[in-house]
Length: 382
Length: 140
Image 1 (tube, rainbow over the protein chains, first blue to last red):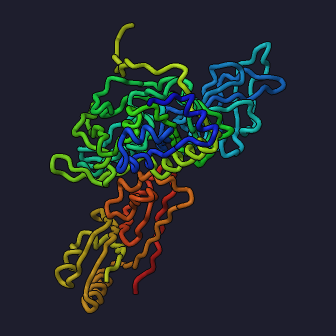
Image 2 (image 1 turned 180 degrees about the horizontal axis):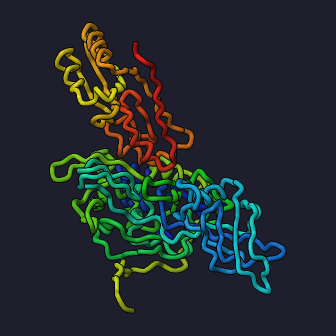
Image 3 (image 1 turned 90 degrees about the horizontal axis):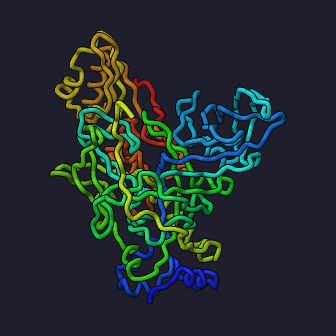
């Protein structure tokens, strides 16, 4: 008998809901049938904690006296985009400091969440209504009107693993790739990963309430580069596919789940902690959340070559073992996302739901079922 | 007993096959961990050695006679564990297996006895939490 989200929420409010982490439900799957899991379990919490470059924050500084219409803004010498109203700005995670080599937008975001004081410098040409031309001051999260993460692309549904066939070490956003297939890195949390536990996004859509950086956040849109055309096996995409655009109040977040990252000779990124509850509406959903690492494949791409050709398909079970065998060659593997943190997030989200602090959301609108990831065509004329 | 040494070569010595003599004449088992030797200039060699006591003494005397200064080395890899997020990026570049992610707890574990001080982990750590300190003394 299928369940509705309304029925599950009633059970959560009464403290009767059966909530399991993704790790727990997979263990349960060794003993119980899909039918039994569908009947017994109400919600499964999934999570990831990985570097997500397409992240950033909107900030409103408040008006000074006399006021300024900020046209260029720097936070701790990191440029923020100010082509908005007078005292609004957006700071992107990967923006680099103009003074320090290993500091950037992600560090500003982490420092703000930590409650640290940040130097604000802004300039303007001055107008009749905003006469001030320059301002230098210090801000922190309590002095700001708003500061919220608005991440255009997070929670990638699967991602390619990377290796390097060339004779040179290469430095990438997937870590240091050693020469002659010296290693391979991979970035999702596999069977714990949110979008791999609901591969067709039946329960995740616009308005879905989630765990974001230690606070409650929401899915606001599909993520950029959203792609529903990736080849699938048992409905699970083999390689990068769907993504989410997320929003959440930074003032309520914790630096335990938002961390600035430096990728050697690549730049700055931001580790983002995300947890998504999956309601077990029926046997199909019970089957989806029972997926194991050995059933989830991704592509292994050669990042040393132009076009990053796919050289193999590997399962997450193989990747997690620390070694993959490709064409008879052993390649050492290492993760990029923290399984430790992801597990912790899944546990915390489970507790929130069990306490009745966090209800499951019926999506306001489902995300696209038919989206293609287009490449850029370079043209000489428009 | 294995021992790690840093050998500092004077310019006149950097083109001599010193390692060859250690192996051939003094029965040293030599594992070269790091070499910075430019012909005609000073050189630096980090080696791990294993030899019988008598061979060891004679081999070290040979090195000194060649004008090579010898530092006995122990290293300390310092990881700010409290701040570690256990992402595992450092493990992807750690070939001796000194840094690993535990398959049960998914936390980073460090086995100092396996570390060869290649220092790749320092660059790989996205939070810049790893430093390698060399603690050594002149071998007399």
